[in-house]
Length: 191
Image (spheres, one colour):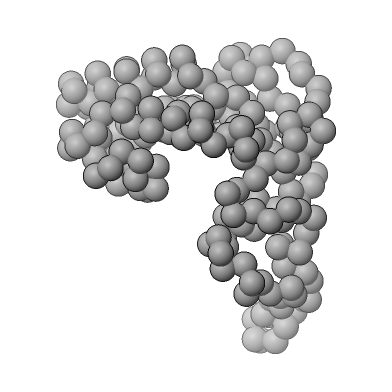
């Protein structure tokens, strides 16, 4: 498999490839770090990239794999949103205020690490978690390679690029009786 294709393989398959020795944790991590280096100046998806810390975690994960240890995510790179505490990093909630770095991982991160995940860093979130799109004065607008201006990133994640002409401007959620219970704009209309 071409190393660049690894970024598009699911976490479960990556974990299996690592366990089977088809790829090493440091090599898999470098695939992601290279993509971040190449694309993030345009996309601004990451607020923090833990180059050194993630590389150390990948090396330790590989040592554990080599020793025969198996965990659900051992060696698999992941990222957390900037509304989740990550020990040693500041949690900004997408805002401009910068307090001290937190000293402990959130329970979510603790469980991911216990499963063997390698934490690459923190990704941008909407300012103070209040907007339907990821854009702030502090960190700029986060984009997806297929994101038209003003479209929330979450909406694009669910819509394959180049299929955007088929947007539905309104959606109706069915009730238990099968009738339309509410009528509101779809997420792609936000922003």
